[in-house]
Length: 441
Image 1 (cartoon, one colour):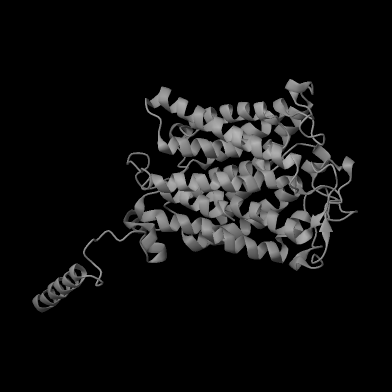
Image 2: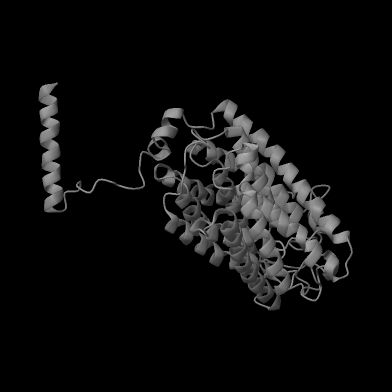
């Protein structure tokens, strides 16, 4: 709940002043749309009893029926869940906790199409995308056998494949990153990109958003332990370590490549570290977390430049940070995972586990990436061909805030406003000018 407004500020500061409100709204509307769908059927599709093949949950919890006063967490120790003690928590608490993952995953995609999407088309996209893409993928990754019902069967990645994802590297970041790439291709490039400079209009917003994200991420990662115990402490510490390391490695890349470390780079490095450690935070040691952060910060800093070489306009680097960072974190579990940290996990290659886990991580990452990319392309093209997805050229040039919301983020005139003598004088002068113009007409 804190992360999504944080994301809004992070993205909002990165766009031009004429687009800031639309960018904020693209995150904020996800809170509304996804919550309604989650209550109606989303939670059930993600965490209901599997309807076949580990691909989708049933309608056991449609409308959240039968959840009040109930507990979840009955997954047996051999089910593969990270919660080895089988502790139970209120079902409603788990429902709300998982809702926050669904909300921010949809909101993350918006950065790839900043400055050019119709608001209501984006809203429709969210509703369709979470239904067809996110809810099934959440079932694959997060629904462990027996967790929401003693006899319930969960998703194929969690239970059959056995890939590790503590807090959403596949279901959230690879999923959103692949969707962002697909949607950027559907909508096309911004007018003037890459010839015209499209610099962030408010870097303090970006740092504020990154700080809120970093803090909120502790609920995201440490909260995924589902108890205030040692495992939550591990996730808390590894999240901090990886993020700090990623900030440093991103800035070092900037210093070597560009000659200066930037504020935007520090904020982006923090997010890259958070993304990469998300799937690994409950399975790696603090030293492993530092290694993941260092790799993610450097690789993501280099990856954000790929859009210029490959020619796709990913406005706010969703692909470079979330897709690449999610892949880094998911795959490096195969190297750095240790059962000394979490007995419910597995040992990676560097801890004597061989290549088996690395292979499983790769399969999970590639399948989620392909599924999200293809389905998002189809959804995006369907909306584009029916109600239209992109604002007009005139609206894009003049400013999407005015065109879509009839508002502007900033009042640049220092004279308007009748609350002071200066403001009243300005109003009077404006009235005289208007009257004179009318007489001339």
